[in-house]
Image (cartoon, rainbow, N blue to C red; front, side, top):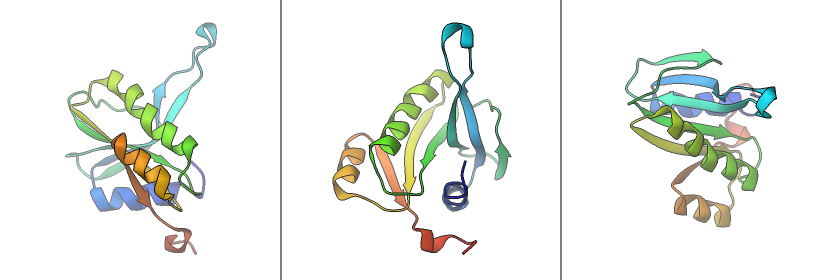
Amino acid sequence: MSKHETWRTRKYWNSVGGYLIEEFQAIKEDKSRNISRKSIDGIIVLGEQKHRQSGGQYNIEGKDIIVVQTKGGGLGMYLMGQAYFSVKIMERFNPRSIKSVAICGRSDHEMEVLCREHDIEVVVIPESENPDK
């Protein structure tokens, strides 16, 4: 994650609790099959003790999770696509439920409408809330 994303993801996580896995490796690279590595900015496992881990994996089978994709800029189609397809990828891990959250620095009304239609929650955390500023 970048300096524009990490603090936003962690701020959101602090508001919901659970076990945060940053840069969750959802798909492993397999060059022989032309598959590139896919990581998700954050997976929050609800109902677990509050803790944070960087990278790697975590057994989420049968658990309630939040898939978090974060960008420092405005809400756009790239972030929306990540939020939508991250759910599809995470279904392979058989969680009990998956909530998708797109975190951004600025919203866009038209894009928010589309997100609501596809069960993606939009969370706006502007740069002015950065604790390092």
